[in-house]
Image (cartoon, rainbow, N blue to C red):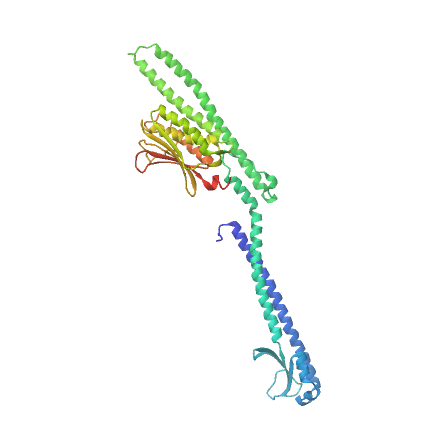
Length: 433
């Protein structure tokens, strides 16, 4: 169904309506002109014939004696009568009469200064049938023309909308990690200014992202050096004091604070590196094979932490264009969180499945669950059991947005842990590949 908000549909409708109106007007006008001209010619012939009869014949008997009526009727479909009527006052009159499923023109003309008039009948059934057939053909032509106009308008609208569709396709697959200038050579002249404006905007975005990435990385490196010096000096000073000295406790607290700042700076540095990873070009990989390779490493990690780790891939093969570093930021964060919050000897499992709209990766743990009232992906939000700065899930969310995937964490229905999921929309990662 056509949408009122669609520019393409509106163009098709308006073009089709205007062209159809012009076509109908032109065809109807020509048809009326043809039929009117035909009937007027018949009327003129009848008028000329009536004038001739009224000039040369005075009575019906005289006309019958001199004219072969059967031959006249066969040649011209005329029937001519000279009648007398004292009440007839019209100079001439034309009327249409239908009789025995036939159509006749009746033309009457009064004799000069007499109460007589000549009446001519002509059978115009063949002409009327011709006109009716012409109108029927016109209606068929209009119907066929409307279909052709709709088809032509649709094709034309598609051609006119191709530049916009190309720009839309480019923007759909473009994010801050894949910013590329538009090729203006293939754009029509009318779209060149728009393309130049978009390229200028892309340049400004790229500059801003580069500055932001350099700011994060540069700030983190600048802060790490004085903190390292402060920590070293505290440790040297701490070695000079005995256990009972109060300053020792203060120095230990300073070292712990420095370690916390170092952890935060490390996360900021990781964020800066994540910004750089977003500029990684997508690669076509088998995501199942990549996860299987990493799953073996996580199985060994889980064993070293006295935890169990299993994985099962119900989808044997899933090949897509993806940025591996961004994916691993999400995948690794979810696995490590599941192992961290799962008690010893409990299980963390990795599963994959597919529904009608998504390919889904699920990491299921047997921990204490999450507080669903909080925004877990907010920066610097961490649980009491966590020793990090609370940027892991925030970075994972940024990576997901850059890739175009959907991530989520929720409690299990049996309240025995949490489920972290990564959803790959099929219409993005399969149909557009």
